[in-house]
Length: 352
Image (cartoon, rainbow, N blue to C red; front, top):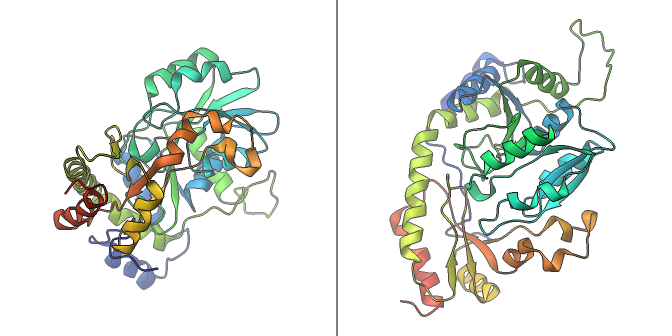
């Protein structure tokens, strides 16, 4: 179905076409093209990190990060209940076990519940900055220090949130704050980890390219064409974040005091504008008829068939999953667009 207002739409108003055309013109379209290193350097510098390692997706970035840290079978990684399933899958891909922590009322991992989940097998914590809300990283980094754990930040939804963990992983999917269509990138200050990430990303070739591979690795490389788009996006990141902050403000104002709608806490950067809604399914059906796409909140990891735990109905994450949704959120959304969207929400609840 085609929506007048889809839930997301990329903003490609910079030098994307120029840069992609350049990769085709010079013939460097593979992962060896210079735009990959240019993007890695630009994104790392923007975030105050020493090294960037681009890859094929946000999920690939998480998987590479865990592998680079030596996490594998027999290990445990603490992961939020409320997250996209890729966070948990990345742990499972390594042979380790995800251990889930319920969310607080801001949807992020409840830091007060982390310590009780730490065991002798715990090797890392994976905080996820949900919908652009920064986790309490001071508390998480303190726990990691006390228990000698690694920290892998899942920043797939949080471009603009500066990393502080051992490795931060970003997605560049088409619905993210910035995009390459598909893609991801890891940031770290540790040169050895950066080297290991790059080594694992590119099939663990030896320096002499002898086709003897000493460990299991991946073909998780980013193409130069994707990197060209990503570089153009990084050049506009401040502009994009400012535009999205204004979108957040307009939604806050337009939906204030609507009976049946509960606004969520402010976001550090806006990925998606999330809210809680009474009669959610009726609202979604109504908005669909009016040309407005919406999406549901994530389901708890303990509700997923691969990680099923009978505790899931009692979780805070499930309480939010039952009535949460997000509205169209993209950089090109205008004040008039939002007036139409919020007007329809208000009309549904009789708050016109």
